[in-house]
Length: 120
Image (tube, helix red, strand yellow):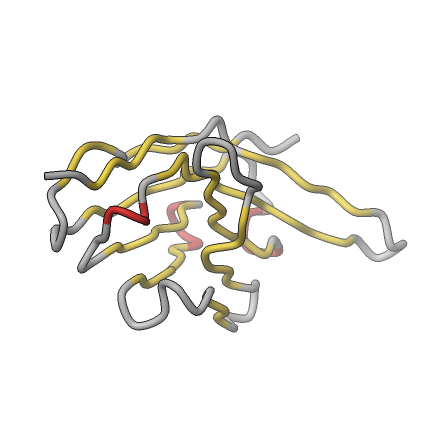
């Protein structure tokens, strides 16, 4: 069982920065692909960024060049550094863990979500 605890959300002005953290329980963090997703009011949940167990990166076009995802396996933690924030980045941000085991069984977990608001 994996539990994800997020922190770092808040209110910032346009052009500002935030760093989100997601701490995972357990001792198998290093084998999971990790991701950040976001959901604005009245809209679907969309992918923001992912990082695999091997360190491969993927970003949504809307955040490429502004956001950076990283992981520290020794601390069981994944980060999302958000720079040059825009009002359209306002959303609830969710941490995700995803893994297929040797037999093809999928294990997926979500954090509780943390609010990011970008406003003057």
